Amino acid sequence: MPPPHSVRLARPEDAEEIRRIYNREVTDSSATLDLVPRTAAEQARWMHEHAGAYAAVVALSPEAQVAGFASLSPYRSRPGYSTTVEDSVYVDAAHRGAGVGRLLLSELVHLAATSGFHTVIARITAPQEPSLALHRSCGFTLVGVEREVGRKFGRWLDVAVMQRVL
Figure (cartoon, rainbow, N blue to C red):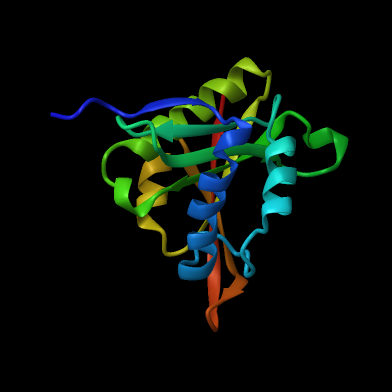
């Protein structure tokens, strides 16, 4: 059995691999509702925004390649929501099914709790059953479905909302 993947906080040198993984989801899937791939400058801004309490983490393969990434983001801009965060998890296609998503999401939940956040929200475009199953396995529950709130590839998309109170 190969050695397991590891997880750590994202570093500036991870930016290009994170951008590669994310942009593939932008162009090839409805996992994100972004429609235009991120530029290097946008990725640099994203990296800066995801240092500190709104952390980003990467999973590394046994060969030390970025196998996936995950991040915490503010849930809403109003001050009353400041103890709630939203998670994002993306796994490179070559590493799916190897526990990378669970490793990343478990680390995000831990970081959210130690940073003093109270709840984590996941907004998952349907149908993304692997992401729904991942979140269920990490203690999230479905709290609602927003019908036809997104549009990509000429289709209306529902968004499932899942929550974990820390």
